[in-house]
Structures are given as structure tokens and as C-alpha cells.
View 1 (cartoon, rainbow, N blue to C red):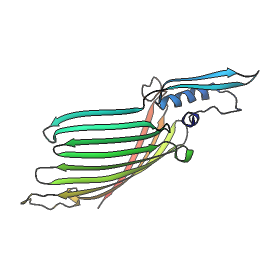
View 2: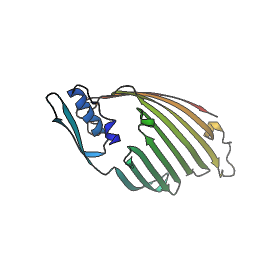
View 3: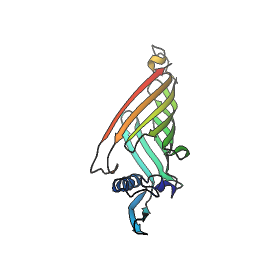
View 4: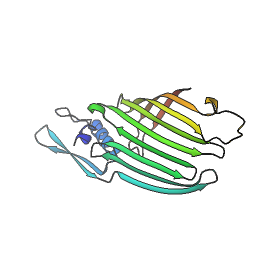
Amino acid sequence: DKVVRREMRVYEQELLNPTALRKSYQRINNLNFFEQVEIAPEPVGRDQVDLTVRVKEKSTGSLSVGAGYSSVDLLTMQIQASEGNLFGRGQLLRLSAELGQRRTTYSVTFREPYLLDRPVSGSVTVFDQSRSFVTYREKRRGAELGLGHSFTDEVSGGVTYAWQTTEITDISPGIPFQFTKDSGAGTLSLVGLTLARDTRDFWFDPHDGSRLFTSAEYAGFY
């Protein structure tokens, strides 16, 4: 109930606005939690109506498994499990793993679309990756934190901070140079800003509207 109500753009005791009603339908549909959405005005007086929102839930979880082969990483297998409506709260949880003969990657992502019931989203991603090359082994670990804010129904912005460490080990004897930050070993710190305007009617299969997106990143390595 809470997840649906916060997407409504028609409020109690207000004049019934067809544009706001259509926007409410689009926002609920864009959640991608329901296979059927219906907003039905039902008269309850000479100049009053009740709005009944009927939705039919669909599965919001997924599990994918894949495999591949390349001359660089040799045989690899990918596994990903995600739930887009965790416990019916609209939260996203994604777990993924890539297992291979030369590369192994694990990552976890969690996203809350309404922090403290406000139009502010928060997300966190952590990952661990190791990769074997012919002459050395590389290990990367890091995390990314993100905050987003909806200024209007179409315009939103966000800021992210990412942190990653890179460690070089198992260097083969006779390598004629040292691994320093110039060769990828060290710590990366990154701040990113985004701004977007999205007027699409349905994000997953749009028939009308557009999406404009701009971003900037500043990173330091030490």
C-alpha cells in the first residue's frame, strides 16, 4: 500500500486532475512490480469520487546463470540473483558472481528508493575481484555509495562516491619494472555527479517521451 501511495500524484480533497491521474498511472507502472495497473474513479457524491487503485503483482525476482570462454579469461561462469521489490518495500537487492579460471568477481548491491519516506534514493555496492595474469596477480576491492533526489517528476540528480584499492601480488621473478600507482597499484577515490530529465511514458518499453542525461566524474589516485 505504501509503495503504491507514494507514487500517486492525485491527493485527497483535491480537484481531480486528468494529467495528474495519468502521471500517477505511469509512475506506478514504471515500478515494474505489477503486470496490471488500473486506477478507477468511482462516484460517491454529486461532485466527489473515490479513486480505487487495482494492481496485480508479478514476480520481481530473477536468477540468471551463464557461461563463456575467452582466450584471456578462459572458462567463466556468471551467476546473478536479484529481487526488485524486497519484502514488498520497493527495495532492490542484487547478488552477482563471476567465477573463472583466471578471474573471480563478487558484488552486492542494495538500493532504497525512498530514504525516510522522502524522494531521496540511496544505494550501496561492494565488490571484490581477483584476476590472474601471466606474470602477476591483481586484486581489486571497493565500494560505491550513491544518493539521488527527485526535483520534479521528470528531473532528478544524484551524487556518488566510489573507493577502490588495487593490490599486485605474486609477481614473477625477472619483471624489469616495479608496480607503482602508474601501473595500477594503489587506491582510487572518485566523486560523480549526474543530472537527468526523463519524460518517457514507460521506462521498459517507451512509446513517447525522451531521456536526457549528463554526468561528470572527478577521480584521484594515490
